[in-house]
Image (cartoon, rainbow, N blue to C red; front, side, top):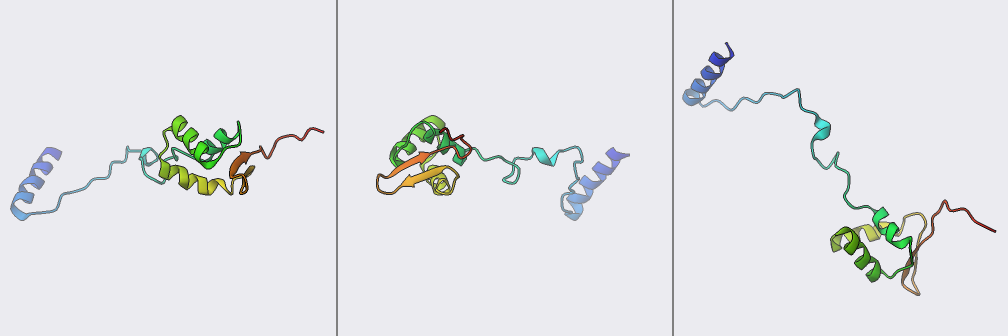
Length: 110
């Protein structure tokens, strides 16, 4: 029966010029679709803070280190560097032009 229906639709499409019929595929999982809504970001501010956790750096040295380790683009680095200013534990010394990081949950030894 379905074979006759498909051939009937094909014949009718050729003669009447009907639009294509779209059928919903219920077996697909929308969570597996690669859209901006469900994709995780490739690079995050954590990539920058990991580089800062070892030593204080200038923006140039930080950029070179992060790009060498993660293959991040320069534009993405500067986008994340703007977010880095508000990250907890990160500070930027304007006089020395150095970024530094101290873990906010680190225990204070006296």
